[in-house]
Each structure stands twice: as C-alpha cells, then as structure tokens.
Length: 273
Image (cartoon, rainbow, N blue to C red; front, side):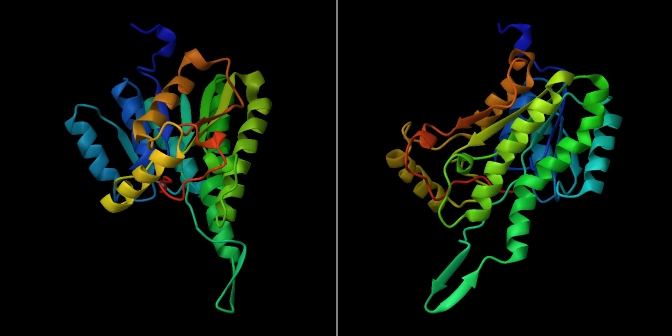
C-alpha cells in the first residue's frame, strides 16, 4: 500500500485539451485514482465520447467546452470548476499543436515565409494558453495558499526541431514560464512544474500505418526502443500533483525513453490537440 502522500483521492483537478491523446491519458489516470477531474476541450468532438466511456467504466468526469487561448473562457472554466468542486487543487495546461514549416524556404524558385498568423497560432496554442491558465487560477491558489500546476511541453524544448520553428520556440518558452512562476509563487506553497513528452502517438489522430511507422522508427532511434503509452504521462502527472512531490518546483521532466539524451529527433508521434 502506497503512503498517503501519493494519494490524490478526493482532490480536484482541471486538465485542458483532454478529450484525447496525452490529455486523455492524464485524465484516465487521475480519475481512476479517485480524483475529481474537469476535462476541457475546444469542442465536444471527442469530449462526449470520452466522458461516456469513463462513466461506463464507473468513473465520472466533469467536462466543459472551452478555448484555452481565451481569457473569457478561462474565467468560465475556473468558475465552473469551483461551482462543481468547491476548490481546485491542481491545473494541467496540456493544449498544444505542431506545424511543420521553417521560417523561410525556397522550393522550385517559389519563396515561402512563415506567416504572422501561423506563428501566432502556434505560439498561442503552446505558450499563451498556459500563461492564461496560470493567471486564471492564480487568485484561487493564492487565496488558499496552495496549488499545483503542470505545463505540458515537449522534447523540442531541449533540442530544436528542424522545420518546426514556432513549435520548438514556444515549447522552450513554456519551460521558462514554468521556472519563473515557480520562483514567484514558491512562497505561497504553489508548485509549478513541466512535463516534456517525447513520442506518444495518438490513436484518435494517427492512422494505423502512421502508428506502425512511429513504432518502427522508435525501435531504432529511441534508447528504450518504443514509443510512449499515453497513460505514462498520467502516472508522472499523478506524482507531481500529489503531496509526495511538494519539494519539487520549477522542474522540467523529460519522459521520452531517453530520446532527449541523443542527437536524434523522431519526426512524428507528437501529441496534438
């Protein structure tokens, strides 16, 4: 039996972009561990199905449709969570997206430049959403003098990905956001940490052939020789949200089978939402 410091039963968490992929894996682990979870997504496309499947298994999760890049939607999300749970113990900012495009390219004599809107969109989805989430929950955490925040970054935070400038830069900036807020809020007993996943193919996004390709590449390029299971990020999140991790803040933990320790980068298997 685990020490009580590892338990999250009865605690209340918000997980954004959690209808599928890594977010879904996190919610499943938290809910099956007895936590109360509010799963959010920008639409009901996958959210309703996920909620139904969890309820069928005997684990109720609350769901809420919200845009994590919107200040107004964040205000509504926090209000909804407080009305449902009474308080909030932790927030996981999981929203993110990837665009494969260099700053500038010249193909067949035709020059292509990353547009302002492409840059802003990826930065908003990977970085601004976490800034808004942290700010939205801050008043509640400061009032109760306690709270846990996890920002989901990626291997690109440590090693830039060619032809993915906006993604790499925003994921790296997310690490700095985490470290800075950890220092600002340490005096208030608020822990802010970052999880940086490697290759975690999403079966709702990638087809069978793509997943087979990711798996084949992983056997050669990842030291542990496999892709990650979505729930494995959830297990790490569970620890960082529990009291067992109270002395950890400002850290970025890479969960990538050793990929970040090599000179390689797998082009694929990135979790998106």
